[in-house]
Image (cartoon, rainbow, N blue to C red; front, side, top):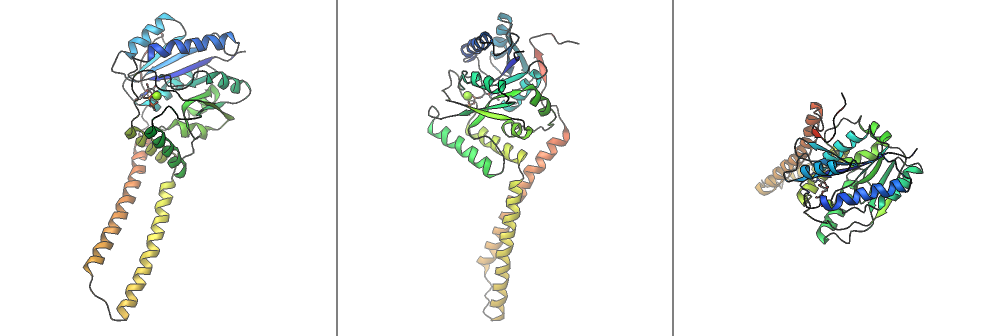
Length: 318
Ligand code: UDP
Ligand code: MG
């Protein structure tokens, strides 16, 4: 039996690029079907992430034009990670494998052949890894690389240079569905689910049209999300730092005692101020980081639905 493949594509304000890339995905489906690698009932699942432009209309038109195109629309913009999750969770009961990919043509569609190959030879998760970042600007390249380095330094396990272009089998997705967390960092969570995995390398191209929705601000937010939802290393660092400061202050107290015993103490306003500032600074940093975690706990205990679908291009079975 050939596997049913669902290509999951998050789309946010992509009216410029969608008409260009959609036929490319369809051609890929046809090619893989013809090669006997995937089933005839494979689909391209667009997830409209609350776009404010014509994206959803375009998806509906595509769905009407060919049965391979289907789409869901999130009730509002929830961000890339959430849109991918919505698509994967929708797809998991209808298919054997999913491949999530951006809709802007940056990720090489042809790497899908190798991904499906890897699946057929036993991998349940196949990571698409960027071989080079020649096409990215210097700024994007260095910030992105810093992002991966910083994440792993902070104890969040991620596959280096892998974004969200990956194949996941429905079996893994069924398990993944049990992860009830609201703070989503798919790249870090998928490795946590486990199962046999492998990587496929590809060259990242330039966006075919439209603009990137991932400015530095969002990348930093994603990194903070990734670290605080996957790792407690920052808390360990604080503990280590606390011990270090404690040792320093112990030495300081000894020094002050000896100085006082020797009788040459001078009331030093400057040093007192420095100490007060330093300690309050450290405390504030620690409180801030603790606050990050408390914020996460706060969100997790609410058990909010992670996505809400407002529309589908097909009739739902009752
Ligand atoms: N995207 C989304 N919701 C958002 C932002 C982006 O679904 O709030 C989608 C977007 O349509 C694209 C993918 O996520 O398919 C990656 O975004 P983009 O290409 O802007 O990021 P970059 O490749 O520049 O990191
Ligand atoms: Mg892109």
